[in-house]
Length: 389
Image 1 (cartoon, one colour):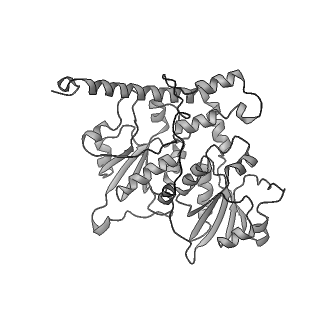
Image 2: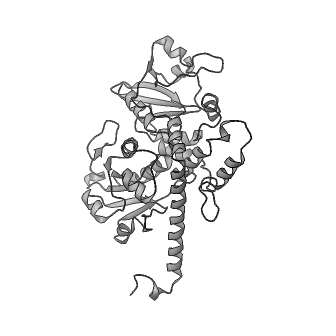
């Protein structure tokens, strides 16, 4: 088990309001390519109780039931651990959620989104806890899924990288990738995510810097918020006894300029929620200027500016975007110890393209079969249904 506590430094489980026993909540999943949809599920689950335990499946279990994960189990454990609503992580959690698991970790109930999770043989992984009345449901975040993000990356691998005419091979691939038997494309067929002020409020801490806290500013795309970002932010967090980290997120057009026209894969609104969900970040500047100016440093009363070991791309006029903090002597480059970048994630997907295609198609086929079986069951006369006597 990996205990987080409620803050970045960790801590013990606290009793519930009024001194009553804390309500312990269980969530589990693959948490592959962790995005704001996962974070929102865990936020909702944490709000249903006092202490949230998250079980994460192994690579072997995911490959058996769904297909190959993008990230290794160790990477996925650490990503979930970095989400601020998570109190404890259980590595190698079983794929099927049982009463035995809930009892082992003293959990009152488990929480899952209102989507379908099936085993390799098409069974509902939450069937046992549902029947026992120890299952709660939260709303799935519309407009994002791991399948969707994989699709965005795969469709960015050829013609989208240049202004050349799309080849017939690529056009056929783009039209057919991941389509279910009914012909619906899983990422162009879902609704686009719509940002609201309420969603930002739900994710934001709402806390301003307090006297004695060290205000640290970091900036970047933070696209496909991943373990490399987490490692960097964790290192930055350790630079002070009481850090207050402000993350500046660049506009999509700015990211396009220095990363290439196919980036960012996640838009600014999506990236904002992904970063806000990280336990090491206190505040986010939405659409931060590329250059870290004197005005920005003064406005946020910044004590320290940090950047990773990745290349610093000059501003549009050729100037160093960090020249002002360097002049003040408050600039530091931080080695996160991780070599993972957004580009490397995309390369992982491209390398295993056929496996990911098969995974996504198999997932949709299983869900359709499950829904069809449920429809037939509901259409049967009451006395003829499976399990009726």
